[in-house]
Structures are given as C-alpha cells and as structure tokens.
Amino acid sequence: MNYIETHAHIYSSKFDSDRDQVIQDIREAGVERVYMPNVDVETIAAMLDCEEKYPGLCIPMMGLHPCDVKEDFRDQLVIMEDWLNRRQFAAVGEIGLDLYWDKTFFEQQKEALRIQINWAKERDLPIVLHCRDSIDETIAIVQEEHNGNLKGIFHCFTGDLAQAKRIIEMGFLLGIGGVATFKNGGLDKVIPEISIAHLVLETDAPYLAPVPFRGKRNSPAYLPIIAEKIGDFLQISKEEVALQTKQNALNLFREIGS
Image (cartoon, rainbow, N blue to C red):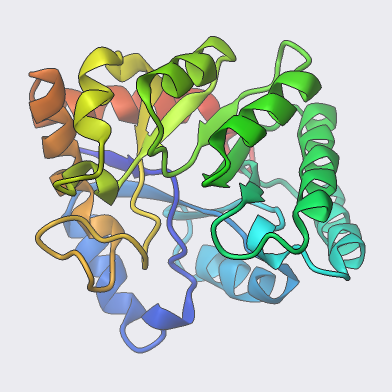
C-alpha cells in the first residue's frame, strides 16, 4: 500500500536527532509523499533543506501559520510571496485562523488569511487551512473569497457533520489525522456519514499522535493506523482508504517541477 501524507512538519527540530531514521520508517510504512506545511519565515530554510535531502518524498508548501501572525506579519508575507514568485510550491499553507491559543491578533489573522487566499487564486494553487476553534469563521472567509476554482484542505478537521458538509459543498477536502483514534475525538459521528472521496490522510507530525502513541512524538509512519480507523468507520478496507485518499491528494496538489 502507498500512502500520501498531506500534512507533516518533518523539518521540525523535534526530528533533528534522528530524522534519517524517521524517514526510513516513513518509507517502510508505505508513505510515498510527505507534504510539508510552512509555519513562518524562520522555518523556510529547514523545510527546503528536507526537500533537498529527501527529494520526491518531502514536498514543501508556503504560508504563514495563524499562530505566527504577529505585529510583523506583513513583513513575513512579503518574504513568503517572494518565495512563491521564485519557485513552485505544492500549496499555500499552513494558513487560516486560530482561536485556541491567543486571540490578540485575530483581526490580523483574518487579513493574513485573505491575502494568502488571493495568492492561491492568482497562482491556481490549493490552500491548506488551520482552523482550530475557528471552523465557522474560517468557512465564512473561504466562502467570501471563493472564486469557483479555489480548493484545498481543512487540516485537522474535528468539526461536526454540518460543518463537514459545508466544507465539502465548497469543494474542499477534510484532513483526517490522529484525532480519529481518540475515544472522545468526535469523528466517529462524522466520518461514517462522509464519502471517502472527500477525505485525505495526515498526521500533523510531530503533534497529535494517534492511539496507541498518543502523547508521544507523531510520525507519518503512523498513517496506516489512521487509515485503518477510517476504514473501520466507513466499513471499507485499509487498502481502499489508502488508495482513495492517495488519489484525492494527487488530484489536489500540483506536481513539483511539472
């Protein structure tokens, strides 16, 4: 089986001590691509270094994470837009809204999100959205900015069925990760009502490891655990989950170098 990891920070310093071994584990688990969301200006170099060291496996995006939207967000966006003008990236991400950690810069988060959505529209790129405690607010902005061609992923989806249906109606995919394995994660009430055609796999490594690794460092090598859980919910095989989510991801992301 071949899996596509649509969201992992494999360039994180949490992998610095054993990244080569982690990459080997990822390959042995059948993961053939790892799409890497950027966080801020400081993470760009490490992300591109991973792309260079593991070509064909680690594929970068470009964007400013909402938790890193501060007073200087416009300066950071200038640098990121320059990168988008210089070379190809698979998507504009990780972008979005976050009302969990700090609401101080929420208005700036919304401005940054709109700016980056427009980058994606101008370049015909998908967007990868962070929406922690802010799914409805994120949906509202995406609906306002939608031009009929905008597409992407609501990363780490943990919302309810009504929210899932609104996202699917916009033509977006749901990123499903380790929360699907949590006893009180809530996705057991949503995924059975959603077609596999609207789902992609992710881990958000090094965060949100699935059971039985919850609380430990996450890895894309754990994607088969998530796929199996989704299969249980949908009453289909892990192999079918792998195949369909892989195709969904490949349909979404631009091939680097194409």
